[in-house]
Image (cartoon, rainbow, N blue to C red):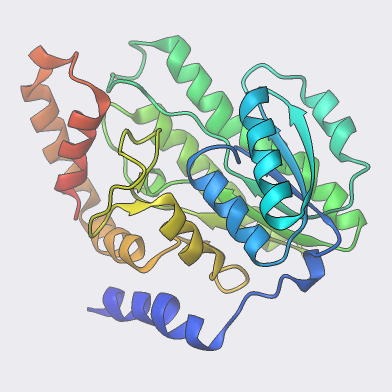
Length: 294
C-alpha cells in the first residue's frame, strides 16, 4: 500500500503543482542519441513541444536522421544538426571533438539495442558484446563526453533511458539486465557528484516499440505506447532522480522488486520447460517473463 501511495504522490499529485522549467535550456543545444525511433523519438518531440528548438541528433541511420530532422524543422521550426555515429564501433574521440565545442544545455541518451531471441549468456557472444557495448559502455562514454561540456557552459540536464530490467535479474536476457543495471547506478552516482548538471535515469517497464516487438499503438494497463510514456516522463524532469517515468510502471516496479528472486526462479523453470522451443521469437518468451512480475 505504501508503494501505491508513493507512486500516486509523485505521478498524479505532484504534476498538479509542479512543472519542469525548460527556460535554462532554450537557446542552447539539446543533444539526442537514439532519437529516431521509439521512446527516444517520442521524448524528443515532447521536448520540442516544451519549447526546445535546437537539436543535435546522433544516430547510425542517415535516412532516419534526415526524416526526424525534417519533422522537427517543419512542425516546430527547430534548428537541427545531425551526426552519423554507431555506438558499437564508432570513433568516440571524433564524437568528443564534435560535441565539445557545442553549448549543450540538455542531453537525452536513448540509444540502445535489444535481443531478437532469448538466449543463455555465452551462447551468442557477439550479440552479448554488442548489447553490453551499446547499452552500457557506449552510454557511459556518451555521458563522459557531454558532462564536461555542460559544466563549462553553466550546467544543464541529462536524461538517460535505462530499464526496469536493470532491477530484475531475468534469465536469458542476462547481458541486457547487466547493461541496464550498470547504467542506472552510474547515473545516480554521477548525479550525486555534480552540482550544476542534473542526471535523471528513466527505468521504464514495457513500452510498445520496435525493440519490444509490440505494435506502436498497443496499449494495456502496464504496456504504454511511446507517445504516452514520453508525455508522462517529461513531467518528472527536475522532480526525481531515478524514475520509471509513469504511474503504471512505477507501481509495477515498486511492487515487483519485493518478489524479484521468486519471480526469476519461476521464469527460469518455465523457460527451461520450453527449452525444446528455443527458436520461439522474443516476444512470446518475453511475455511469459513479464506476466510473472506484475
